[in-house]
Length: 161
Figure 1 (cartoon, helix red, strand yellow):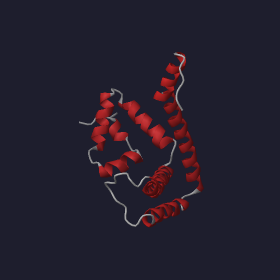
Figure 2 (figure 1 turned 120 degrees about the vertical axis):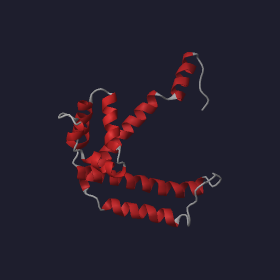
Figure 3 (figure 1 turned 45 degrees about the vertical axis):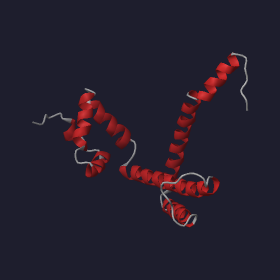
Figure 4 (figure 1 turned 90 degrees about the vertical axis):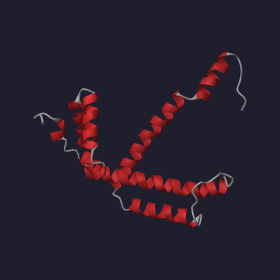
């Protein structure tokens, strides 16, 4: 039996539909999560306002694409860098023809990124800046080294550098 105000009937979020193609039971899992929180209306409201309300689905897709391509570029360059800087590391997965294949991979990804609109690049820079601020603020406030230094300084000691 479907209730008239059932959020599942009104959930026309593009993100949910895209995910549902790969995960057929996603709709039921999300509904259960909403019921567990005892506020399914809030779940639907947040999803619509945050994901769909502020970002058109095309822009969201482009942002996901440029972020994924950037990650591939970083990994490709990292493979080359680690192969020469840390040759002693155990490598359970091997890359053939280093540095040719990783360099080609990075260039192809950069070429695909170059084809994305300028607005997507601006969004990437803004989101990366936000992410870096959060990353470093969290790291600074939870740093074990900083906590040890504070304790050492309070006790009159100094840290070896």
